[in-house]
Length: 218
Image (cartoon, helix red, strand yellow):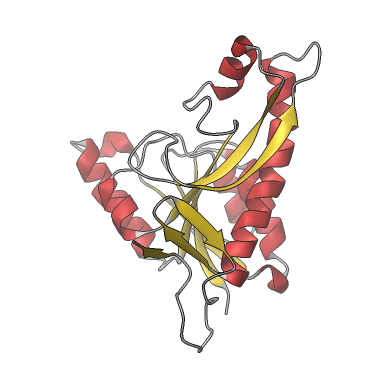
């Protein structure tokens, strides 16, 4: 039984495409059951439609308050009964209704906790680091403050600018996201405090006793 993924996008959807490509193989262990967005007319939605995946749009501007948008988004996600939500270039901060209902995975183009926020690559270059990278993490109420699941380093080359460095990070980021989500789906995962352990939970559909994927322990 595949783990059900809802993927959230705001733009071109290259991370989504990597997940769709991986999920075409049953051995991946997860299936993208819906793609949601905060705006219409984006390539991410077009990618989903070409793949035959249901889509939905929940725009912030269609709601009187951000809290009501968060509640509406949570409801749209819940319609698809996901085991895991993946924020794949989704450019809105998720609120307590979504985060309280679903485990959410995100990627970030830096080695958190270094360089959080929207300008991570620019900030890393400005600081003069010799190594940066990308992080796959669980989303919490902060900005890029959730527990780390996986990280991979990317060297900064002589002459790098923001665009060249970001392109190399994106290549690693797509692969790391697919690998991490696949492992979470196939092997299960647990969260204890801020420590995420892969391979410690039972996978979806397994009858044996044990923690389900996404079990949070104290």
